[in-house]
Length: 229
Image (tube, rainbow, N blue to C red; front, side, top):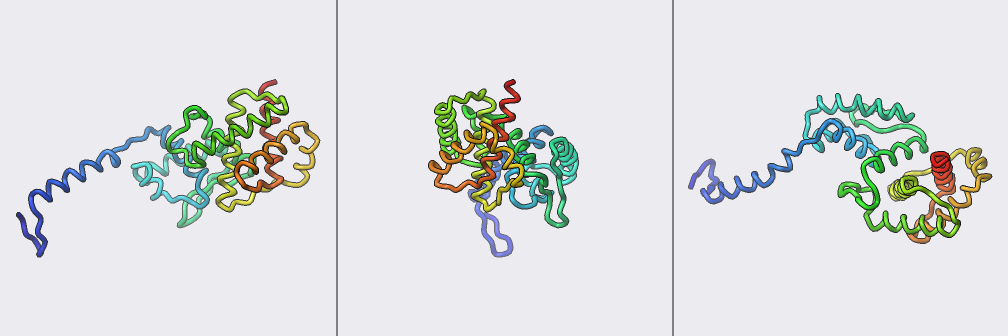
């Protein structure tokens, strides 16, 4: 038994503490490759509703702040290629800026490029697995009813797209679309499909989606049609 500054620590207590620290070691030894850090940084940025600091990224990814600064150069380039801006707010951190449409398209790309509905990742925190499957069921129901075909990748993208919308609305984010753009989309056949999908999602999730959401779903359906053509 040792005694120092009035604190007693037995040999068995020391051993227990050693084992406890060893049990924590794997968590602090986690290693991400540069590409994995790139993907994780994007995921955190897209899912955050406030700026994230270099210190926070350093803690989450187990690397130095200097490494995070270097990683951000690649992240900024990736976002710029998708018409988005990586803004840095003094004393607060990084945040993504850009149009709603560009934000969603890039966000869906981040999710769907690595995952599909049959293999949902454990760290995908936008919605629960059950909620993803409920969206899947809602979309399938409307598409079947209206005899509208989407390839699997386009359907998965639509499901992630809707999941992002629900996640953002739940966090108080206001979704809008310029009225003139929405008016143009109303002439498209896909607008009616999008309208029914919106109504089905609202029934199943007890949530009110803005009219703008019909427009964004329509844009996704139109994009899928071009991709299939």
